[in-house]
Structures are given as C-alpha cells and as structure tokens.
Amino acid sequence: MKRNIIYILSVALSLLVFQSCELETSDNGNLDGNWQLIQIDTLATGGRNDVKEYQLFYAVQVRLLCLKAYNDNISSDMYFHFEHTADSLKLKPASSDGHVMYPVSALRPYGINKEQEAFKIMLLNSDRMQLRSDSLLLTFRKF
Image (tube, rainbow, N blue to C red; front, side, top):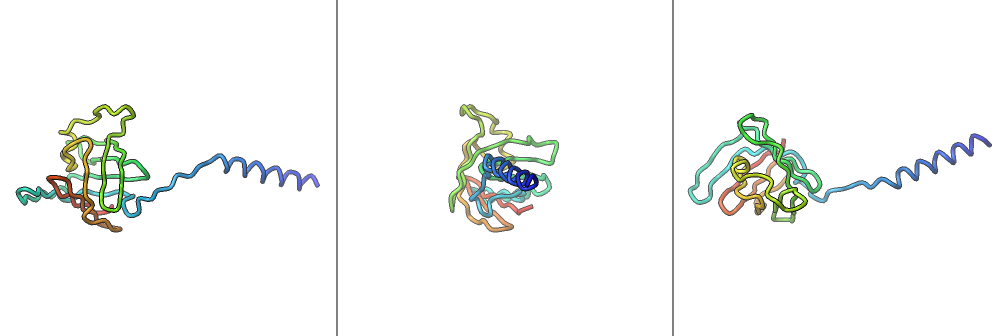
C-alpha cells in the first residue's frame, strides 16, 4: 500500500513538472541549421567573390539568426530576429528597443548592407541556400 502511494505521488509530481515546461518548436523547415556563406555575387556588375575561406556562418534556430565568423579579421556573434515565409527572409536587429546594434561595415562581409535587410529566397533545400537582396546574391551550403 505504501509503495502504491509513493508511486502515485511520483507520477503526479512528474506530471506537474512536465506541465510547467513549454517546448518551443520551429516551423522554419530547411532554414534551421548552420549555413556557411561560400559565395557573394554582385548583381549589378556580375562580380563573384568566393568567401568560403573566411568561415562565415549564419546559424538559424527558431526565431534567432546569429552571424558567426571563425576568423579574427571579421566581426562575429551578431544576433538578429527574422521573419521567414516561403519565399522571403527579413532580418531585424535583436534589440528590444529598436536602436542600431551593428555598424553596416561589420555586416558587409556577411552580404548584408543594412541592419534591416530583406532577402528573396531563390533556393532552399536540405543542403543549399541562395538569398537575393537588392544588390547581392548569397550562396550557402549547410554545414
């Protein structure tokens, strides 16, 4: 009898603990993950810049995008919130009060020309992504 009471109390306590937890899920599909920027094309001139060696990454999870460089010469760990639809990706700084968080000069190596950049998704699958802004085409591989 004592064993049954302890078992029932343990189950009840477990249910209360798990009920208080809220799991956050993502509906980003293939966008979630770690993307290495490998090429930046300039639309106006047709110029092509291979940036694979700079180790520039877009890390995407739930509603947060982190720009990360595994390179001492480029600013790293910049955070953005984003809006993702089937054919667009819009970045906005992760500040709660809307102030400018990052200078444009720090964003340019990542193919971003303004803090609130908008991209058209040209390609997005499980291992490749292409984003087009007003002036650039960014090519990524999933890493």
